[in-house]
Image 1 (spheres, rainbow, N blue to C red):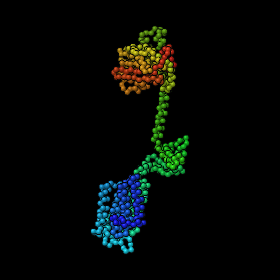
Image 2: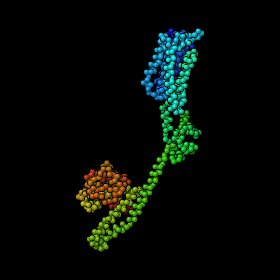
Image 3: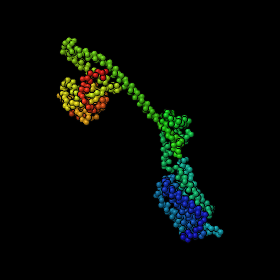
Image 4: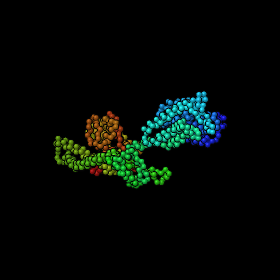
Length: 605
């Protein structure tokens, strides 16, 4: 072999082969490093085998002796055997995504090596090249006389080529039209060297006096490599984007700067067919024209569907801040949302009308009740005072019951009017210093009669003597009275209701503790709800309107206070109301509790 290498001459064919091989090697390196596709390893093997064959053919063309030309031709069979087999494996992996070739990879080694071994031992059997193989007089290249083994080897390789064509033919039947150019190129690459080899074997066709097969395969393979890089038929990212684009349920349209449609997905084409492409295009243009205006992009109705056009500018990559390349318009189907919104608006309107009608009814009824109630209470009070004459025992008892119920009804009316004012934010509260200790003592004192009627004892424990807050004295007294009366109603006979006032970290806490049955966990919404009551298990349903704690909670929040409770079932409940403490230089400036009571009718009226 060294003798043959030393005997090489720098012919045009050799330089051409070296140049093509160098380009092929660079392309192969780049492909292996930067590209990813099915059957990549088989493609690389094909490339390497092709380069090997080219170099051996170049060496053969640059050798002058018969022995050296035959030697290089024999070595070329390593590549000749690998190329069609590896190419077959590549096509099946790339097009058919077949997995059997991994198990049959041994064939890729055995078949070419067996062929090479048979050719390399030709001097023993002369079945590949017969004894007639020689360099004719006046020529520089060997004129090969092929034996039966040569045709057997060629037939075996042709079987792999036919298998490749079968795979491509089946792919043509299954593939989309977008893949046909790629498949056509694969067919050309497969058939071109096949045709060249058939012409060489059958008719003695040569290139530079040599077998044209490797040259033809190289000429086809290099352009295909470029096509493989640029074609996106088998690129997962590109195919995925295309699939996502076409399977979207919303119509998507790409429009260039001249307002012409460049691309539409399947949903857009379907909408265009159903409702007219001209109308569809006009609607898109209108959406684009409104993109840079303060008017905004309006919803679009097509048939029974309502779409929200979402327009996205496509910037020019060469000049991102300059003119746009076009726009992407996505039509989001908001029909269900519009229907639901309209239904909700209608329901809210009906609820608002019902609430307004209810409030008006309550307000009218309450105001209409106040005047006769005032007269009724006044008449009953006058009769019970004895100024109209002495009353017999049964009559007085009946009038006292009527008077108590009149007072209850009057209080209910006042509470309804007060709750309504709070809900519509029409209640105006004062902000002045209030002595919370004095207010608690006055409230306890005035509720002792009610407590004695229930056989409940009302006491105070800890009361800070200097606890001033800023707020409305009447509203705070309303809260405390509600808490104390509730504690009395929910307490058992012979039990104690305890009031306390403590100051800690700048906060004043007023607490009313009862010894009732307690409140179960998770009842806060019901405790402070409007017209809501928590059932007293010992007494059944407790008398009351269910407005007291609701009003108290709202008043506390409006006064920047906090009303909450702690309770244990079977032990009792403690309601707390907290306010921020304020400093007072003189206690005389504090508004007395009795002054607050005088303004009660003004607030409720």
